[in-house]
Length: 455
Image (cartoon, rainbow, N blue to C red):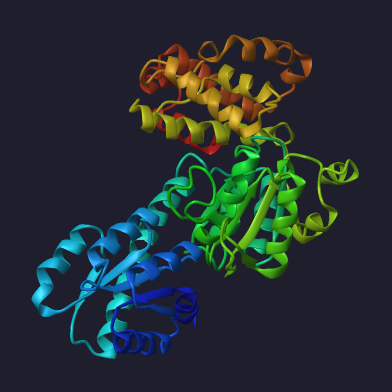
């Protein structure tokens, strides 16, 4: 069923000056679900390409006026992403090979059967899908398993992850709210990769980072010549996310005119490229995020109430980092491991004072601010050296001085005091566990075990 849906979305233009060839190819491909149009001249084909998007062009090399080789050049100028298959007689195989070198995907010698044309077209589309999927998976594996994904163990985080797991199993629209830097995109990725669309693309659009006059093109795509600078036709984010998830980050910053267009897409599940009259069906899950209070934005007339209710089928609120500070050591050590690998510095740890410094800060920039602070600290630390308070910026240390010296901070568990003392001794011994074990009168393995239990 999934393959049939993909075929139904593929639009093919057949160009040949022989009507019987056009009709034969059209019949063969329409039987397997492709949308096919035919043209008997290169000039007419170019007009069609400028009016509507096509996924593939099948054209004969030998045609009067403008031949297939020149048409190939013009197609690639118009839209480099269009797939091209050349039809050739046996006498012009050399020309077909040259066409492949110039950007055509395949060539088909005459005479050919309906099965041969169907097989070749399917092979070209499969090859393109495989390339896109490999690129997509490489990108997403890096994002999911790299620096962008880290989850805590606090009660707040456990509840959040449990809720995310339930939402991921649905296909409903989701609205994620939370302060800047709190991890809204991480949650969106967890929803996508935990659901049925996990193997399809996850496409992110930051609505606040794209100028208003370019956002429509970014979302819906455009035709060549639709505006100044539109040298090529372009697929928009809705098309790129086909079958997968489109993440609209900071949707609260989107202007009202664009909000109306997004609402229409959500209702009709169809888009129109800028400069085109044709509508294209879309199959995407929408996840939106904002750091604004949309209820207040609606009252102020800056956000559409009908769009809010379309997006707010499921709402997930992410707590700021200051409300689950027990996750700070876990987050900090995760980022330290990531940056140690990136900077090719031996893995290290934080001193007790450094951890208390991190836990005392309110982190108005949330997890993003913490990640940046850890990266800076590692830059100034020597290879293998414990991360100390001196490696953090002075403003962070100054803000934490009051809370670090408050009586409440002294009321800590015996286990926390023990761990801090072990870390202090390790720091004094420059990380030498054997020397620290002698001073503490315990074995090096006990030091390792207690530190592992603490993490």
